[in-house]
Length: 273
View 1 (tube, rainbow, N blue to C red):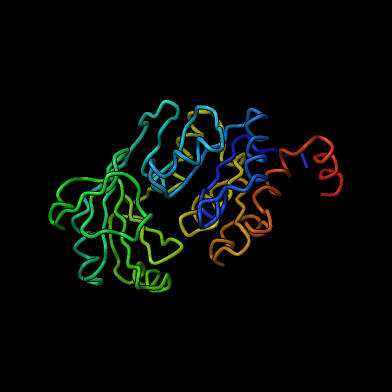
View 2 (tube, rainbow, N blue to C red; view 1 turned 90 degrees about the vertical axis):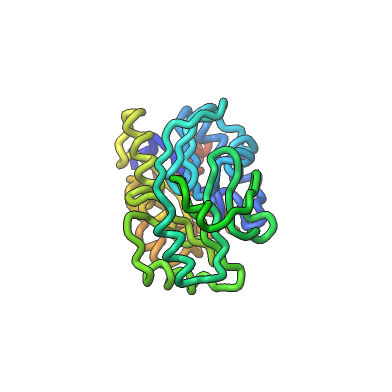
């Protein structure tokens, strides 16, 4: 077993932190071992930067790129600086969603500021300045991402919605709950990571990526070793090269330790692989 990751890409929710946002000590320790090896580690998340930054700093990561908003935004931190942002006109998307889900809560992201939205989302779902606007105002200018939420719907309802309304010119993914992330067409975590790898001279075959959600499908299929978290949806596991133990059973830490554990632990893994 001579392969070793040259870059590690990690989803946040369900991979680094639990549903309450708690970061286990063994996960932080495993991340720190990656950092100590001088291997680039990139957070690749659907979160906005305002929600990503606390995790970046809690992990004590060195300066480097961060993929946010499902690939629509790439920043460097610290200090925070915008490296790349892809936007699109949200007018057609907003009109289509409201036609199918009249009571939907819709938000458009303002990078580093917060969100403009038609109705308040459940408490804690969005961070930063929240500005209530009409649908016409939300649709008036290009944005990196549109978020659609319906607290009264099921995740399955939004999976069906995403596949049935046939939105063109955008990419979309469904979150843990009835939550739909919509970004410009062809934009996802994999495309953002490919740009970072091109800058660093790293081939996708040498990337280790971990994730657990529909927004990780492209990333897991693109990486040389894409690992789905145990308990993730079947289609996510099908896109991956391997499936780790569940987050609750320490799957993230175990996978990272496989490549970045103590020398004696790595020797044992090589001998038993």
